[in-house]
Amino acid sequence: MVAPASTPFRLSDLLRGKASWEARGFRVRIDEQTFQRDGYLAGTAATRAAALMALFEDPSIDAIQTACGGFGSTQIIPHLDFDRIARQAKPFVGRSDITAIHLALFHRAGLVTFYGPGMANLSPPAGSAFAEAGLQRALTLPQALGRLPHHPDDPFVRTICAGRASGPLLGGCLWPLCKAIGTPWAPHLQSAIFFFEETDEPPWSIDAHLTHLEQAGVLEEVAGVVIGRMVNCEWSPARPEYPSNLSLDEVLDRHFGRRGVPCLWGLPVGHEAQTLTLPLGVRVALDASAGTLEFDEPALV
Image 1 (spheres, helix red, strand yellow):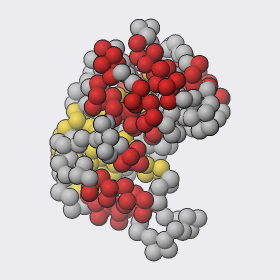
Image 2 (tube, one colour):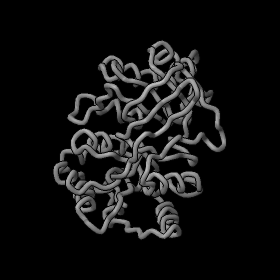
Image 3 (tube, one colour):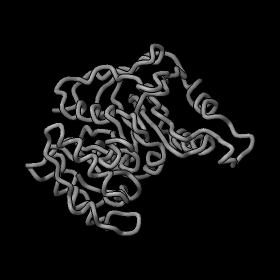
């Protein structure tokens, strides 16, 4: 485990995740860089990048899981050697701010990566047995993952635009996706199934992010859209920025209801305890009419 962005404030959160892996028979090494502090960052950009490079090049390491998201992922990307990483390809796991690294590893090194919880968010109370089992399955199943299960506590999914589509699944957290526009690791979603999720962003902010992607041309040729869990993204009296706010349903309808590509909302991936892990860069089949997403090919090579 390594911390390429921020580091958790509670050591016990990391130790819970470590204990979960060890109880399943895995050996875990928490890299010493994880405990460095530079304000809200886990050390300097060069130090964080060097730690990640060292784990990619260490033959005794089979997979890399980040500690958490936070902030700072984009700062390390110029310090990474993607040719060396491509020669030592191995599973890389993280979510939220780690989206930027997922984009860079896919576009610059051709890697399939895994959008899932960091070690500090893997086990209860921040995580769940559902999250633990989902991550292990994603990292160990030699064949295609098949159909993604629905949320165990809230199985409802909403079809925003009906239809079927297939293509590589690409995306991540919405805010970092927008911040990547104009960089060498900007998202390229032509013929892809676009996945996103978000947390703590009100509807007007979600509207702004999606408008940014549209006006930058990023969404022009997407084959389909999969929306994960939008945690704490609805208007509430506790956050009354605009008293006549649109609902999140209305914002998503305006952007995807008439786009003409299949769009499904509510699959269990996001900033909450009951979350799964998605391989990014793997071909999927989306059936928005039936409310399903199915992985067509193995994530592990």
